[in-house]
Structure formats: C-alpha cells, structure tokens
Image (tube, rainbow, N blue to C red; front, side, top):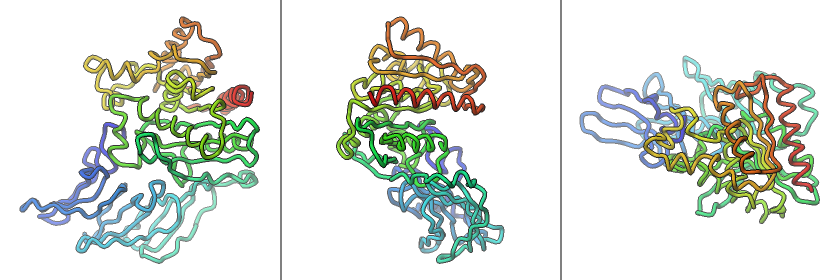
Length: 411
C-alpha cells in the first residue's frame, strides 16, 4: 500500500459486502481515518459503525451477520487489538488484551481465536483464546527465541510522541544507552517502504536493525526510530503529506526528532548520524545533502537517488509523472542536492538490485566526483539484490555503518 493509495481495507474494494438485501457495508476514509460504514441502498441512509482518530485495519463479518470482528489501533497507534462489534446497537467489545500486536484468525465456528502475537522485544508466537470478552489467551508455541537469543537483555524501546515544528504529533521509538558516551552521540534509524509503520509495540520486520540499534545503545548512542510523515497507521492526512514533495515533511520530522533528543536527553547536536535502507536510504541522502548542519554522518543503503528512475506504479501515485510534474521529481530527488554534502557519507548498494537499480548509486557517485566532494564512499555488493541474502554481506554492511559512526560521531 502506498501513500497515494487508500488506507486499510480501502484499496481495490477489498472490504465491502452485503449484510442483507438492502444493506451494504464498506470502509471509507471520509473522516481522515479508515472506518466501517453501512448504507441502505434503497434509502441512501449511511451509518458510521466506528469513529475516532484511529484506523479499522481488518474487518470480518460474522456468519450470522449480526457482528463485525475488527482489528483496530484505537488503544494506541502502535497496538493492534481485536474487537466484536454489534451491528444492531454498535456496541464494541474488546476481546484481546495483550499489549502489542494481535493478528487474529477466527475458527470456522467462531468460538476460538488463533492469535499470532508479539511485543517489541518478543518475536511472534501462536496463542489460542476463546472468542469472548474476559477470556485468557494461552500460548501454544515457544519457537521464536533460541536459548542463545534469550541470553541477551533485548531492550524494550520506549514508544513516545513529540511535537513537530508544525504542531503534529510524531510517534517514535527510543533506545537509551545505560552509559552514554561522553560525546552524547545519537543515531536515527529511518525505516524504509515509505508507507510502513515501525514506531510500534510489536516485533519489528526490521529485526536486524532492531538488534543493531541495541548494539548502538550498548556502545553509548541514543537511538531514535520515528514514523515520519508518509508512514502507516496514522490516517489519510499523515499518509498523503509527502504528495509531490518526498524529502519534505518526512525529512523535517527527522530534524525535529534530533531537536527532541537534544532538548530531552542532552544529545550533542554536532554528533548526530542516521542510517536506513531503500526509502530510508533516500531520506538519509536528503538529510546529508539538505540538512548538512544537522547530520554529521549518514549511511544510505540501496537508496533512490532520482525518482525518475524508479518504479512507475509506486512513484506516479506520489509525484505524478516526470513529463507532467517535473518540479515534483526535481525537488524530491537527492541527486539534485548533492552539492550540499558536508559530512561523512556511506552508500551501500547491491549490484543485482531489481527494485532500486544499482544505476542510482552509480549516477550519484559520478555527481559526487564531479563536485569534488570528500569523505564519502560507495560499497557495492556484486551478488546481492535489494534485500541482502548472504550473512557475509549483512555483516560487512553493518561493520561499515558502525565504523562510520564510531569514527565520526565520537571524534
């Protein structure tokens, strides 16, 4: 799902159906958040079954068509909880209680729930629970954590929100060092995909980065991971805030995150770096080029450098098309801002990348050479696609990122 597309349950008419011969149910973002509605096709009368500043993320109609089973983030943007919603009186009963993500499959007779559950520092396990309020979930698998994995005290990152310069509330994860380095350095991790959520209370799909962030905190860094503008989980306006200007408000949110760290944790503003892959790599480049006095070091992994080179289906929904909106492409592409580089930049890119093609890295490399820029390097990975496969490649990449931060942010 992309920034230009609809929110949960809306794209491609996935969540729509009949309750009876006169009543159609559907999801809509009329209020700015994905909610559940009915309409009488004879009278045209519409009813909102849910409302509020949260998203209805999954919907299933009960077999007797008297209830909806829904998953929402009403409790917190970074949680997923399961409810039973009465169609007749709109009474909503919460069924799941575990903090984190509860991904539910209902048994055919609708008496039990199979719950795939995780927390921020606990990977996914399977639970079984009766489908009624007050029932207790019973864990039935114990496969996700090895004995070696359990020997380390994985951090439970604090999920907070801070106020951006324009007044918006930005959600974030913070990893705090037990013993901060005397330089008070900080690193921002920038999630990829654009339309994705990572400042949440469940096990991240960025589990390698989660582990690396723990390592950075062990080495004295404050680490912050924000759901910048364009991220999932916060409604239509948040998702579409990057329209025609990628590297605009989403980059501003990352700058505001630095200001938050400086103000609340005493981070030295001269010792801040960032890293991320794909869209996160793109934001890293924009940060290093457009905000060179905020970020001293950046590791851009498999980054887009010119959106005119990227996948048409994705990019056209956000920036329109190059021939009819060249301004949007120009102001959104790091290639055109390379002259701003002051700090230390690492670019890592797989040469077999079929998502963000290696040509993006090559094109930017030539531009940096022409500009006479110093303190940058390109690390090509001859055998890797967009998502690395070989452990040796992952190890090499993280060694380079860690070395970059150690040699620049702790100087």
